[in-house]
Structures are given as structure tokens and as C-alpha cells.
Image (cartoon, rainbow, N blue to C red):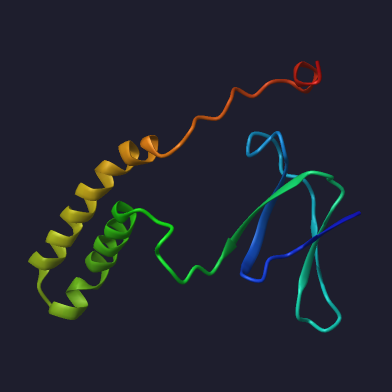
Length: 127
């Protein structure tokens, strides 16, 4: 069993994948072990080169794009506008702004990524 020390800011582990599979294959089974002093966690898996997918509590917005931050803010504004102002037109404006920003998301996302290589069978990769 392979032990992987959990980073301190991990909220919850979601999946473990093989290094070369990324998210293209089934997730690998794993367990989480808590230390005796209840201060740290360890992920246990039988996989040698594992990639973990997990959530964590991020307290700064510096790793996100300006478009993402504006979109989240507009969505939040839409949800709280009525409670704060009591005006339906401000709520509608926030909703329209959210949809406008959301329309830009696919293009912005496409400009920031490198496409994954096509998934091949194991026997092809092994050659």
C-alpha cells in the first residue's frame, strides 16, 4: 500500500488517477487514514504514480482570471440583490450581466488550455 501525505489545505479527496490516464479512465480505489493525534491525513492507494483530485479552501483570488471573478460576483449579486435593495430591476440587471459574462467563458477557457492527447489503449502506449 502506497502512502501519500495529504496537503494541509485539502478539504476532501475526490479521485485518484493513473499518471498517464488523467481523467480518461476509471478512478483508482483509495482510503484515507487519520493519524493517531488527529492532526494529519494520509491517502492510501496501491498505485505507484498517482494523481489526486481534491478540493481545498482557497482564500485568495489571485489564481483565477478577472473574467471568472467578475462572473462569480455578478452571480452573487443576482442572488442577493433583491434582499439588499428590494428592487427587481437591479436583480434583473445582475442576472443579465452574469449571462453576458458567462457567454465569454468558453472562449476564455479555450485560450487558456492545451488539449489532451487522444486516449489510446494500454497495449498501444506500451509499444
